Image (cartoon, rainbow, N blue to C red; front, side):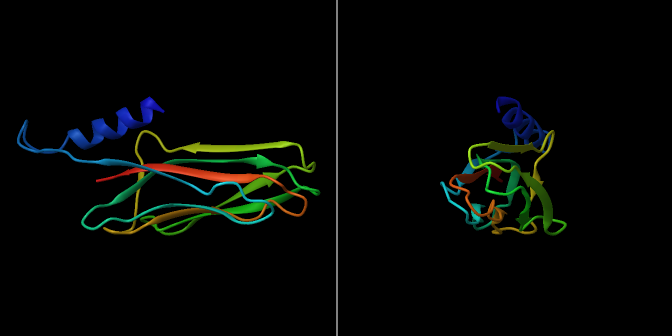
Length: 139
């Protein structure tokens, strides 16, 4: 995790005259909380006059009665919506863990003051535990 923030900081400090520019960025993290057989959503908020960047996300939980693929979508990104299929195993006690870290650079929102939303569809019938966490920064 420390490598992510160091990489982001080094990219931000490259621009500008030596010592003439103050770089101000803010870390952001959002989580869905636990859901059961429902959509889990994490939203990195937009903020006035700043761009939000997505640096990674983690999906975790337990399986469902039957195996299936659940759609993970990321909206608000420059370049448009991203969809990823995540395999959910059969077995309500089988762990699910899917992590993506976007290095060496994070992905910006499509515009200033634009939220980035990371959501995964229900893991399916019988699922008792699912969550998603997203992290990034605003600059």
